[in-house]
Length: 202
Length: 168
View 1 (cartoon, rainbow over the protein chains, first blue to last red):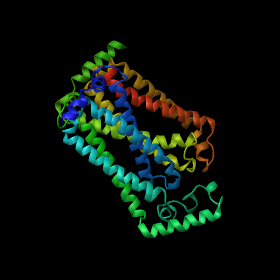
View 2 (cartoon, rainbow over the protein chains, first blue to last red):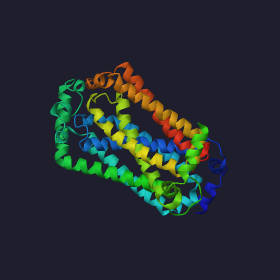
View 3 (spheres, helix red, strand yellow):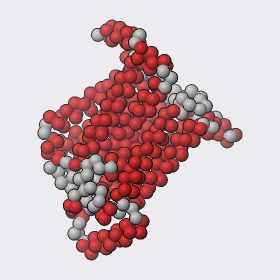
View 4 (cartoon, each protein chain N blue to C red):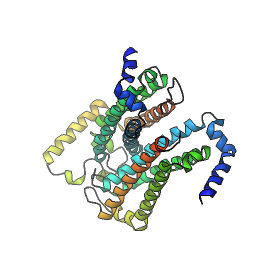
């Protein structure tokens, strides 16, 4: 606790919290909201796809959004640490903050699982995710470019499919968990300003 | 005009709903804030997938089916319109004199006109014909760039409400 008290009273944190400059606390907070919109927003769009919205969108093509979501994640880790440092003693004793962190960890575990088990691996499993056979898997221009490689990938995918046993039900479950965990993270995050210890910092 | 706005704001504050939002119901404001953030994420994510695809990102997605995400962006928008109006009803005085609020409204209008342009110029039909790997027409790219920029600005000025002006 002494550390957190020292931390929030450092010159930097005092400036961040109390300078009144638009470039201090307000900017960090805005970036944090932006990162949330990027990470949660794109994750929700992917969840909706897995739950059957826009069935003709090839799931594998959406893998490109993972780097975007990771950008949102890192942005929010950095801005989140700054916001935490500025209000360290209060946040570190706030149970609501703890709840928020738990749900973020859970949501990120689901995100990693989605990335590894669903979006990187589709072929067999996605044929059951409701897409038309022609629209799933790699985009057409990627297919047939190196046919041996494609065949190898297909065999690997089939092997993985058997091994991990991920199926459509599993992907949908992950999507529902993702929706729920992010909703709870956002809710806890917002309620930090109303429940638990307060310092009046927004 | 200005006088009318002030009179209207004063009247709003006398309503029961305003009283509830301003603390009469303890959880009114926090609940709406939470929903506003959920709606924000839904809107940004679903519209973001469409806009980024138009700009050439994740081109494996065909241009048509991605628009199935748009109704969900509209759900997000409606959540935020309802909760946003409730904020206004709860504390009109903190918005009417707030320059950040004016900017937020301005960019909302720009985003709205931009969407109208997309649908009224037959752009939906043109982009729906785009297959995987194909480029979107220049017009669609411009509309998508304006869309991303204006929604970021809506978020930015919304977040600035308590700092530039006098909102909570």
